[in-house]
Length: 416
Image (cartoon, one colour):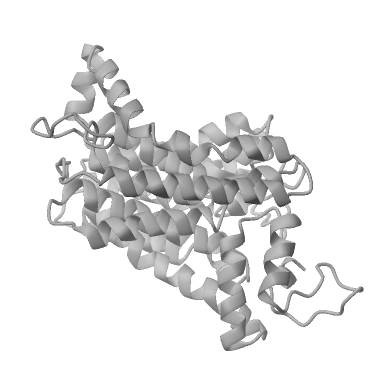
């Protein structure tokens, strides 16, 4: 059973798969060399079982806690982007979402990844739209990104969408001088650079342990089931078996989701104004951090059992990440030459665009890339399901505040 991969369980040596990992060195060695998933979640669970034991309740409680905690966070995110009605609707959808509830009862990393995903996006929008968000929020944003990458593999596409959004839609303060590594772009891009540097060792581990054939094959049914409220009534086999609601109801659910997506295109957001916070990050500490992390990655590559030269190339990642602010500034300058696109981004509701990028943009990119790489593990897409639910709940913002329309919409969500 996959839950036995939690370290600290007293398995039988020589007869169990995996072997018991009762000490920190054994745990680190096995999960670096033999386990394809990120190591951070296992490291956290190793500390957890040392405190609370390895009973079923103890093993599964972290997922239950984080699954429950995701509900108020998605409410806060929805309230900030579209208003309290949409936030409440999305929270209802997530709280009663069978796929989310299933993985909130398993000692696996997927719900933790979903929680960190929503939290990081909430912190990002807060940083972008609130001039009073200080160092604590910035540090929390970096820590959440690093923790997310250390929890689930699909956090990398989320970071990619965060960076793309910041590059395209966040303004640079014209009063900020262009001298210095980070002064040329929005401060948030500097924070993302630091997060990428700190997360780079997990990228090396992912390249080291990459494999094929462990997930769903490429099929249009997978895409339909994702769009249908994030695998709400999924028919593919998996840990819980298929939920056979019949082809007619499945088609109705998909059609309903498509209609809601079309309606969401016109749902008015709160149009939170994005700002250009200052001051910029100090250059020397970040460069020193990149050098140290790169050196650590070279050591990790040297102890790998195969793919060493590929890993040595990956070890240059922290140094390459230092070019991100300058690259972002160059892209920003290039975009301004396209008048129509530049006009669109200036009038766009930036937080709404971010939710669309995460709820549909990232999954579609991953689906398109899946013939080349094994990516379509439906449980791993819990990183993106909350954003899809937010988009599907967004049409509530178009309903009149007075009258019975909004209460009726909430009742239909509960019924669904």
